[in-house]
Amino acid sequence: MPFLVQRATRASRVGAAVAIPLLVALVTLPWWGESSWMRTFVEFACLLTLAQMWNLLAGYGGVVSIGQQAFLGLGAYALFVLADHAGVNPFLCVPLAGLIAALIALPTSKVVFRLRGGYFAVGSWVVAEVYRLLIANASFLGGGSGKSLAAVRPFSKALRESVTFWMALAAAVSAIGLTYLLLRSRHGLALTAIRDSERAAASQGIDVDATKLWVYLVSAGGCGVAGALYYLNTVRVSPDAAFNVGWTAYVIFIVVIGGIGTIEGPILGTLIFFLLRETLADYGSVYLIVLGAVAVLVMVKFPRGLWGYAQQRFDLRYFPVQRRVRLDAIAGDAPCKFDQVNT
Amino acid sequence: MSGWLDTLIQGVLLGGLYALFAIGLSLIFGVMRLVNIAHGDLIVLAAYLALVVVDTTGLSPLAALAICVPAMFLLGYALQRGLLNFTLGGDILPPLLVTFGLSIIIQNALLQGFSADPRALRLGGFETGSFHLGAGIAVGYFPLLVLGVAVALAFALEMLFARIPLGRAFRATSDDPEAAQLMGVNDRHVYGLAMGIALSIVAVAAVFYGIRTTFAPTDGPDRLLFAFEAVIIGGLGSFWGTLAGGIVLGVAQAVGFRLDPGWGVLTGHLAFLAVLLFRPTGLFPRTR
Image 1 (tube, rainbow over the protein chains, first blue to last red):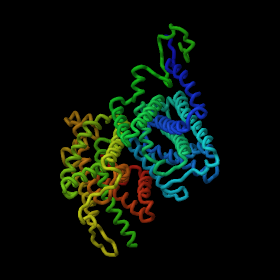
Image 2 (spheres, chains in turn orange, green; image 1 turned 90 degrees about the vertical axis):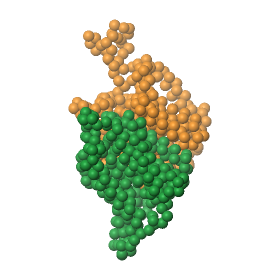
Image 3 (cartoon, each protein chain N blue to C red; image 1 turned 180 degrees about the vertical axis):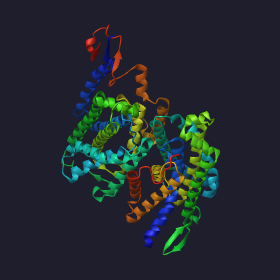
């Protein structure tokens, strides 16, 4: 019986048609937008990058961590040390910060991977606290009160803001693109297999521990980049802010509300987070109570998140990572449009 | 030398408080494998509850336990049956996310209701009293009482699990919920009772904590981490292990504080990581 394996969907083609003009508009924003927009977007892009990285780790890798603020903070401090103490160009420090965060994640993994499941989650939080306390006790890093980034002073404000903006845009687009390409590769297939059943994946010859380690390192690197970018934007860092568990709380809420295990979910979740924060800005910490309550409600009632629900209901896939077999399509029109035809 | 002996004794006494934080967490790990991220925030919530009871009735904090313990029991039972039971199952994310959400909600609700100012419970002198052991070492009556209560609760829970029908239901549900249901155990009710007992112990821990130091709405996460570390250091499945884990953590922190006031919490965390590296099953593991 003839059948074909299909990947692209109508939504993914429409998605591409919308995404390209949107990207062009964003890239040119420094010439027509206001600087406050750029600062807000950098924050948005950092949260989106963090959310994609956490989604990759937990939604696809099945490794639920509440200690990702460790790598965000380490990335931020890597920027401050390299730029202010080693004299490296601060913009060049951003990718380096990601590299350093991933390097530190390697020995860290040796300790935290001794714990499983929920115990791993809390253990990773303890490790983040260890890094926070080590840095808070280091007087050359400003101790508990933190420090300002002196290395950006030679650059004009406009140049600094524009370059930071472009780098943040690039980081968010890369985080989405990297996740997408990764999931379409054989490694992505291994990851989703592990998420669904570790034991079954191992029986099919997947090296479960190596795959988990590897996704942990990638995720740490992404968080490091996001941390460096965020604090390049604010130009001041302190251990309590950079290593705050609130980062991971926001990110988990974003991913769960948007839809865990989908690429679209974190994007939708970050948009909802910003809308909620701006709408409830006058009520202090009330938005956190609302956010927490919405996340709890979504987890209990719609465990696949808003996007997961929409996906199931309307079969929407802007980033098609799954292959689908269609038995009926050969007789239909233009089979050459599809990815692959088998008989 | 007597300085170090003093540090050791103060660490053991501090460990009594950490063991009290940890025993409730150990109970729910043991019965339903639930990692409750809101555990520390529930301790802080119970401390504020005690504060409200003391302020409105004029009772002493210890007498306020007569109201706080049953109130926290009911809260725990309702929380488990109304919310947390729906998150239990094969997937690890729902219980983690829901308790994390609760943690954020409790912290911010307390901030709204009580502001960020640190508060304390007062016992009218007993909390500062001490007796001398000689060689310049003083032992506080109150920390000794806390340690004694921790030992008594660890003993009581060991007895509950070993001797009492409810403890048998706890063990059976923990081993195999489906087989336990076939034998007529209502696992949802059993989980509710376990959370109720855990939060009753939380109420006791909270009152002692509020008398010993000040507390503020954002202090929950640290309490959770200390409790978690005590459970893992001691080894899963044993309340004596949890007690020992609390004491190890207390001593590690006391030694750190003595070396440098900024290091106390850090050395506690490092002791926990060292146990993970060299003895990942904890010091006194017992699979129940």
